[in-house]
Image (cartoon, rainbow over all chains, first blue to last red; front, top):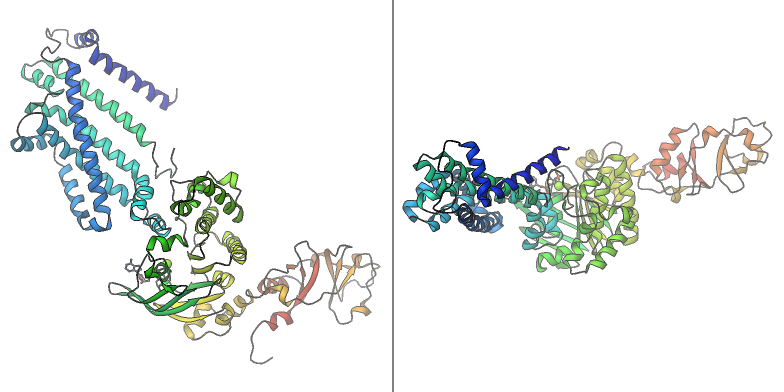
Length: 250
Length: 361
Ligand SMILES: Nc1ncnc2c1ncn2[C@@H]1O[C@H](COP(=O)(O)OP(=O)(O)OP(=O)(O)O)[C@@H](O)[C@H]1O
Ligand SMILES: [Mg+2]
């Protein structure tokens, strides 16, 4: 079996496991019983796991979608001639902010934004913005200036240069930024439950409070599984775009 | 016609062009040449408004370029730059169709046009249409770059070291192709190069620059034959007389060549004035040469000839090639053949000298 086929098989098994774990109560019970034979309370009763997954995905989807759109706009704006002056500022700010641990972002966000779903989404949005801005800037900056000059020289308008040359040539790097942003947010969103946002963090915190490792693991496994699947999905999406190393779209 | 009229351009404190004036007549190739940093690329970019001059005018057909909207101007000017001008995420066909697409041509027309142009530049459309730039050799990529510049049939071409990244052998082929395409299309061309031999080959006029100034303009044979000052003399090199020979076509200088049929007996009394007699077959294909002091007593010309002496130049090549050929053989002259190998004439040192300017003849 080739390594590629092996990877594909592994991913399908993982996806199946995740679906069964979330949606088939008996399967989850079986797995957890195997891991924690002494634990009596294995299933979190207050909210069902599928509901927590949906809450979690809602937070991530809304925040990441907004981060992607706004991040792209900012990244594009500061690489235009008119916005160039703000380029160093945008780059420094996003590099600096990315060194913040995600938990610190939330800790800073909740005194300002309060408790619940909305402030968490807002904090995730801010944090998810950074990789998108960073990658949009470096993607567009890495497009060979002579190719841009050739495009301008052929008579493209600024908009055409952006959409026909710069974005297609940097799409892979930009998608990689969106991918990073979403993966980080899937993890960070679990911490969001500490300020009452719901999501998979709920069951993890319940586990920590009651000293129930099965609960903690339920949340952690599910979040990690979602992150894996999303990561794989975006890995596939990236290959749709021009690869500067191969210089050919596949 | 492209005119530079007292054009100056500076970048901050760097003066890139200082009061530059020259004219490129319609349908001719002007080559900008000079040391690195003398302002060649800057001049080119002023024509399609990638840059704006600080002073003076650049005119196209009498109208200052600043009066055209830049995109419209650029779509009417082919622009070829060194090596990486092709868009790497587009196929050859899409690259060639770029400007026609900007001009609103539909897909069928663009595809047909790409086919025509690939033919013109000597690449098979079926084979190359769908390739990506990375799949092309350097020479092929340059050809496609030229095709793209020609796609919308612009009257003007700007070429910035178009063959600079290609190895010398391929470069010469590309130059020959460019010359023959230009002979057909008669574009108004500004061509930038570092390579004097290239300039001499492709130029109708040379604009020799130094530190943002024009030092001398003129036909290559003028510049090589009469350098205006020491800088030019040094720039064109001590072998300028040799380089100049590359401007003259053998066909324009050759004289009649004495020949006998291979079956005939060679009677030197009939060729008293010649050092060499050439031997041909019934179709006038050149077979060899018989030098005067050769095996004259042989029965037929074919037996007498020395086929080690069959080197020849084609009538389309240059006097420089002819001189090289003369030096290659033991004879003091070289036969000239047409594209079918038929003997059409010969070049001796006298013809070479006749093209060389000298004070005392
Ligand atoms: N964008 C720029 N900013 C500042 N200085 C520049 C810029 N572009 C060119 N120059 C300077 O202007 C001068 C002319 O540059 P230009 O590119 O026209 O030279 P060139 O003759 O094309 O040289 P080369 O043969 O090396 O390509 C050089 O001194 C160069 O350093
Ligand atoms: Mg240059």
